[in-house]
Amino acid sequence: MISNTWRNFAGLILLSALSLSGEVKVLRNFTLIDGTGKSPAASSAMIIDNGRITWVGPVAQLKVPASAVVTDLTGKFVMPGIINLHGHLGNTVGLVQDSNLYTKESVEHDLKTYASYGVTTVLSLGIDKDLIFDIRDRQRAGRPSETRVYTAGLGLVYKGGFGGGLSLPGVPTPIIGAVSEVDPAVAQQARKKADFLKFWTDDNYGAVKRMPYDISKAIIETGHKYGLRVIAHVFYLEDAQHLVDQGIDALAHSIRDKPVDSALIASMKRHNTWLAAPTLSREDALFAYLKTPAFASDPFFTRGVSPDVLKTITSPEFQKKAAADPNISHYPETLKIGMKNLKALADAGVRYGMGTDTGVPGRFQGFFEHVELELMVQAGLTPMQAIVAATGSGAEFLKAKDLGTLEPSKWADLIVLGKNPVTDIKNTRTIEAVFLAGNKVY
Ligand SMILES: [Zn+2]
Image 1 (cartoon, rainbow, N blue to C red):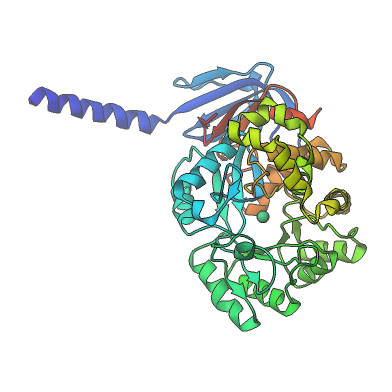
Image 2: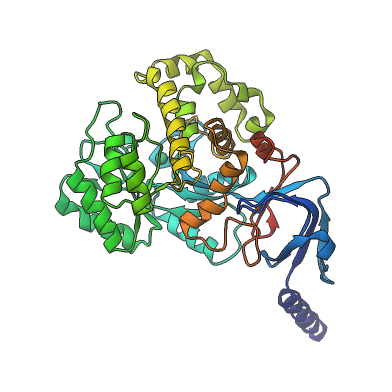
């Protein structure tokens, strides 16, 4: 009895000594891509203490702490974890999207999938059930082992319009028919402490109604009144111009009907409006399955999907279904316009992040973030610009001061790559390890 008590007591002392001294890790001899846009730095090293970076610099100046666990990464490249500013969680299992599938388990499954592809933070845009807030708050209180969540809770849709619960039945997104209905709907999202306020305006190629501008104005102003930044699904240049003039904080998609013009650019710069999420891979995916996509035989893709899903997306039935989409002929053109508009906005100095709209059937979480980076480069950005959009800029947009770059005091959310993504953006796919808050999660 006595000896057992003593043994437990000694164990307790040992445990608290360990947690007091912390858990220190050293990574060394890698090329650092820090997410700020600075040139890659060869022969770098990093000290991580309890999940946070405490020092980063040339390996020649490294002083290895006595208790540290040292990992040699000679020949490897280290970049920050990817931040996706437009994702969806929990509603899609395999190729089926159904709001009844949304559970803690399905959300956490998706967060683990994102993490395994190096996407360490996601902004979930507008179709989340309230259980998301427990997951988010638990993550923020500690050191998550799955992708960090920011959420817009439930976004607002226009009665007779597009998006949210109108596109995915069962999702209780507030349906707004008049300006007077805006305040209570926004107040509800603010009470839940949503990170952003989302709304949709689109007509799905003329099939439904776009949101009137008096309602979008009320949503934007009410969002700001409650301290929420506002982000919208847009398609049309005309809508974007009105929303930006009304003070919206960010667009959740590229403009896809017309080239952006100087009036929009001037207004975006004046209002500091972000193109948060170009979502080029969204348009790409809409016509990717007309034939067997090349990625269907890419092990980097297949490791993230079940054999059933792989069988289905390569089947003639699936291809026939893709071809039957009444809007199928539009997508190659809308992708092209979206790409040109991203490049035009970037060149003009408008701020942009990386976002995909994954988590919908056929838009696979994790893999498509890497497709997005590739498309951003095809649109004319440099690989470094695409990387900064997906790391440092993403964190800046989220006002996540602990994320996005590999600098002292930040969380050690990072990816170890076998090849240099700055010389070829497709090398973001050479993932050898993913760390979240200093813990290896893949
Ligand atoms: Zn979306």
